[in-house]
Amino acid sequence: MLFDKNPSILRRLFLSFLGLGFSMGIIFPFYAQFFVNWKPGMYIWFFIGCLVAGTSIGLANYALVKMILIKRLIRISDVANAISNKDLTHECVIVSHDVIGDIITSFNRMGQTFRDMINKINGNAEQLSSASESMDDVTRHASEGAEQQQQRVEDVMTSMQNMAAMAEDVAQHTGESAVASTQADEQAGKATQVVNQAMQAVQALADTMSSAAKVSASLEQESQNIGSVLTVINDIAEQTNLLALNAAIEAARAGDQGRGFAVVADEVRTLATRTQASTEEISLIIDRLQAGSRDAVSAMEQGDKQVRQGVEFTGMAASALNEIACAVTTIKGMSDQIAHASTEQNNLVDVVNQHVEGINEVSQRSAEDVHRVRTASEDISKMADDLSVLVSTFRV
Image (tube, rainbow, N blue to C red; front, side):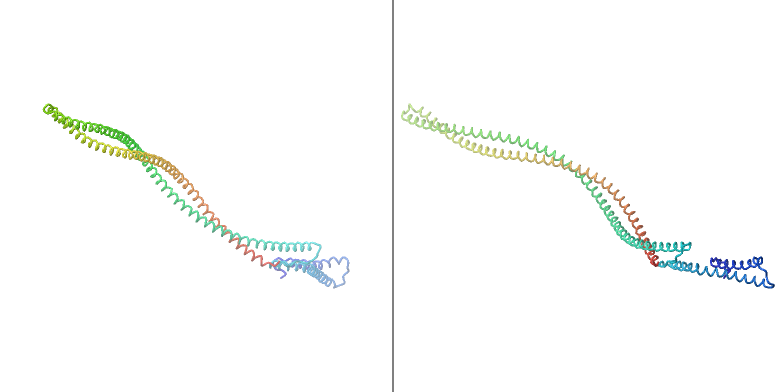
């Protein structure tokens, strides 16, 4: 044990004290012979006694060192062993105003520093565990939010694609509507021209009917005038017939002298009778002519009224066609604007699609980052738990 190869300060101290005492036991007899006269045969015993005395002094010095110093060092060793066994409640209660005291003070400060560090690490571990739990909740919510955001972005992309398809359909139908509006505008223009021509023709017919009505009225007036003349002629014929009858009577009274005058009177009476009959026939014809003229005038007036209504209706139709043409022109302009807006909408939808795709990529990267952060948070939480378990093994 004394010559063990493993280093030991106490063993070296013991051997040093033992060697010092043994050296003193060897040196002292040689030094004493300069001052002492030896009795015969006593030198060897003095030499042995010096060796024993020197060795005893060395052992006594070691014992004193062990009693005074080593016990304090053993106390420090016990506290150090306790600290090494994670028990920080011990400290050295030894007062020594020297280097040993400085060592003990430094050792106690180190233990206090360890206790403060353990307490601080324990508090930080609890805070880290709480923070990691909060971070885990935040990252979990962020992960769920990122997934929901990504799903919504995908829904928006689908909606934008559908909107783009609808916009293309709208643009196509708007183009077809513009073409149809152009054709309708052309047809409305042609119809307006036809209606205007028809209105001019009806107006001319109305003017003609009005002129014919005036002519028929004049004819009726002339027929009435002819009737008046025929009445006069009929009256003259009656009077002539009456005069011829009187002349025949007077000729009969005159005898043979009045026979020639009687023949003439009879001829005049016959002519008057025929004139009266013809006048009656002419009067009947005039009456029928007047009735026909009145019917013609009434028909002309009714026709003129209907023609004028036709003119009015044709004007209304022309106005309606003009309004239709204006409306078609407006619709065509609106269709062109809608087509232009649809084109711009398609362009905007393409731009929005690009931005949404960029947002989708960012959302995917964000989801991946959140997943990595959540994994790191779980690792931090696990390390915090491990640190808490490790710190809980210390007694402070």
